[in-house]
Image 1 (cartoon, rainbow, N blue to C red):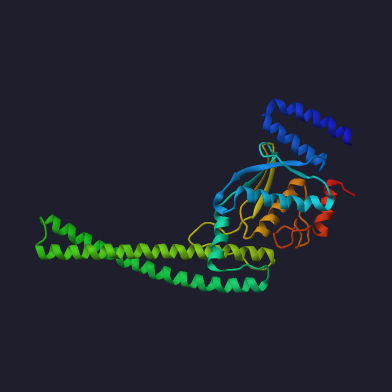
Image 2: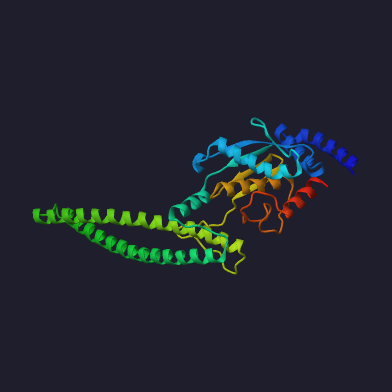
Length: 311
């Protein structure tokens, strides 16, 4: 079997030289090696995209990656990963977008998300109150905007009428200026209320993210919550591992603590080794970042030994 694999590998490498760039060939070779010769050579990694929006330095991030690496290496006393600053085969990216923004917003709101039905119920209660207040303010603002539009249309029609007559007498002119000033103040008030409403929508959407995570994590028979004032559903992954002809990469999008960052890094590194999800909710390789431990469970260790052919 191994002999056949080596022959196929040789043909693949030769054929690839015709159609792929050097980097793409390297990617194909890396995929082949991980499939047929798992864990024989350490996977080299380096930093790719690094967004400072998380408030984490590169040195701190590299330290967290190393801790995640050790989670896999220590139990089997084997070098599975190796840091290669300039040319690592695996690029690890830290990407700040709406996912981490939602996490930061929850912290600002003082909302602590726990993996329990009680936590879901408490956050759901906060969500209901916030949404009711938002809808009430939104309705009042819509009425205010409609009234403003009507007043503005009346003012514009009166100004146009006097302009067609060659100008307004002084008392009417002064009255129109007062109306203009009043409309300007009302417009500023509406803008402030719109900004406040948008801020409330942002708060609610952050809570939507937490609720949708808990619905999935707790396997609740509840429909996904929808964001307000946005097309964003609030669903997301904390991290993602991808492998293809262009290479391998890990994208990290969101974490609410160093512990969660290390766990999601370890999870994606597990995928880089070829591991699949396991059924233990506390495991590193569980489909959700549910647990808190930074050590392998028996399910993790069994999957690691199976993938790396370690007895």
